Image (cartoon, rainbow, N blue to C red; front, side):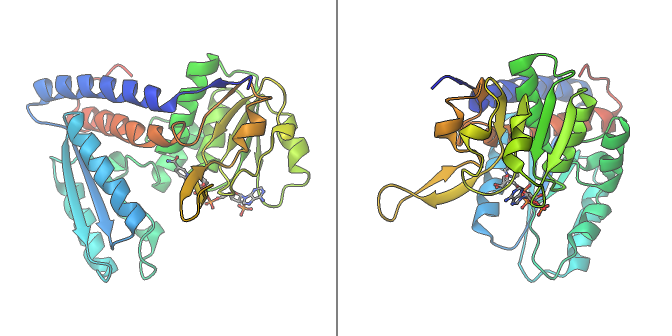
Length: 294
Ligand code: NDP
């Protein structure tokens, strides 16, 4: 293996520690803790794990965690009423509605109901617009975490060729916007892209957010490129009945060619909650009118 391993787990731990210090400072200045409210509808097991981890890490950072667990058959109107209550609650700085929502709910409508200044997930159209026009707002946590890792690894990204594989609203598109803001030359690839290996081969930075296990091979990677693997895919393990997590990049072959690469697990994954906590403490300062050096 030639590539340097980008240790997202360690970076995320450092970020949480910095957020914890800022949160303590906020509490001293504001006379209250910063607060994050998480709303979970239904009993999706993966979502339950995420919400539990978010709650634990919020408290560990010295912030208040408010969890609202609603039954799977809750009406959309009742969920919107909960969001309205949280919008109006001065103890709540950030609101996160865990996706996916049950199919009888309109996700866009629910996200649109969140006060954009409490939308720490950065999914509200106002924050999407702020990101694309360069105004301060909230940026989706996973792509922001990727940019933090890239800047930590490479310093300035200016002038680099970046290829983002995937164009979802939560990862691919905001990732592309962030890389444009860093003055990269950005290509966004997706399922209709022709000759994807050739497109990826151009890139100094490859961000894979596809959801297909080990799809991006080492021979697609330009020697020395930096590879950020957002994918989290559970596949059958070597032992019968066991499973393991892999990314969207074939780590074995890519790590022979890349200059640096994030592993799965332990790369991008741990960044998401750490950035969520960072967004929440930023929201708290803005909502309380307290200056913060970012
Ligand atoms: P989506 O399914 O919403 O988007 C996948 C994207 O990949 C789409 O734009 C799709 O193209 C594209 N795509 C699918 N197949 C191909 C293909 N064969 N060639 C090229 N492009 C393809 O996924 P998400 O963006 O939500 O998530 C992507 C991955 O990242 C998943 O593995 C997910 O688990 C992981 N993830 C990890 C997070 C974390 O680390 N915390 C957070 C969020 C996601 P098209 O638009 O044309 O359909």
